[in-house]
Length: 186
Image (cartoon, rainbow, N blue to C red; front, side, top):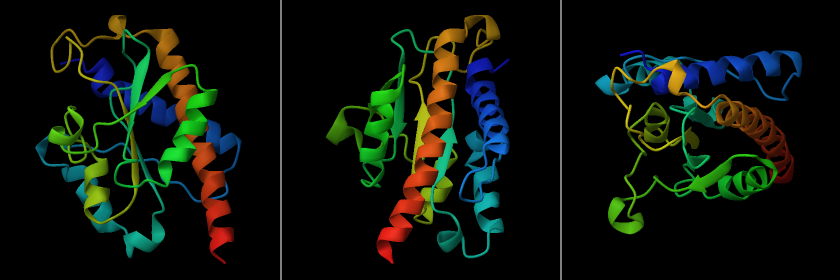
């Protein structure tokens, strides 16, 4: 299928963030990786995690972008704060400054939240398995999910642009907050 939202949108957002951060240097080293074989057991993400020596001490946060360009209600989920509560206040601050409606959830058992649990359903799951904190940005499934109709014509450019701006702001904010927390721990 064309996969315009799932997941060309995530790759496009990743490339936009990388371009922005190349011009506005972050305080931390960042790796931008487009991974493969997610739906075959997170194989690409697991290979990346295995390739990083002492991953837990070298990776402070995984930010995953999967299906970020379509939502009729202008909503995107930021999952992960259930497992890593320290991310929630940072995400709430980003939410105040964003044109996108950022929701929380999809990161705990369905019986507790009523929502599907996405904790292990995308590439951030491989990082979570080794206790690397994650934030996953994604929209809920839409009628074209995994269908030949997942085409570029169905992407909402205004929403997608706002999401990309929010993601870049999230990356920059986490970069600054990770420096603050490191200084506070000294």
